[in-house]
Length: 411
Image: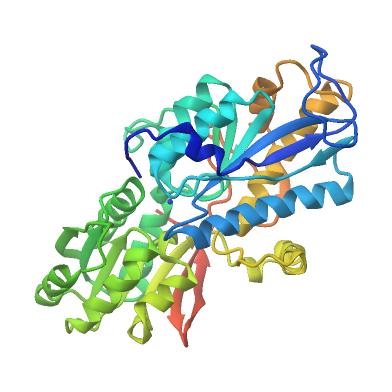
């Protein structure tokens, strides 16, 4: 898929961290990490996500799914002598908190990887911190193209951070994919485009707009909203007066739900379309009954429909988590498993123990990680992007998200 003043480190200390506990081996430098209770070395992986606040439904799904990956590795004895333990950090969807969490994780010499964050704007605040420490991060949810391909990605792709990877595809694909569906399949030709001015929302709206106009569609109006408010009456009136037959919203479900409801209340009985940031059951609750027919694209295929995800779904339910795995659960599991695979490679290559430069070696190993995951084949291209480019269109029907179409962008 945000930016405040730098807050005190004590706030992050209260939030926790995600840990991998490696048992029974010492590094080349003879430095033994925290005792896990079974005579082993502790290797920490930070999970960073919004665990409180409006976006916590997605964040908790990320946390729990990463936890499940660790428990599954333990049960299988996947890495000989290694036990995985999970803690997590709450970024509240705020870049300042994410940067603080990144600094804390880097300061812990036992940290060898990070799963997260959810928000692209939070990732921007963390990347330099992790890169300087050769600490790998794998996001299950970031879709902003510039995170991997540089700020000028549309003209010249440049990878700035070799420590950054993601298992989700990018908005360079998601926006145009949505535009193709809206124009070609849904036969909507006049769009009103709205975004929340944040990295994810504005970027997604821009890639959608470019493709929609290229196809022959007309943008009849644009507007930016304040994500800290839920009163969208003024913009809803503009949508009604514009004559649009569809609204495209770049942003997340806490604002998208009320926005959809208020647009309909203003008399514009047209669908709101958004990206993966709105594809959560909370959107349906916020949009109310008039949200029927609204659409969202999301990365990958529906987890419930994937043969590769059946065990994940079963195990997640059996684990008794109180929160749903949400839109990014499968990707969070695969992100955590990618870190586990990279750690396994480093340990295996070093005679069954962690080397003194484990962080750098885990980061290097991540580039060649490849396995059959919950979401399908998991591997990374030269930019650190997922090689899995599949996306799905969903619609709200009978109070639930229903799959409409899965595929890839053909532009």
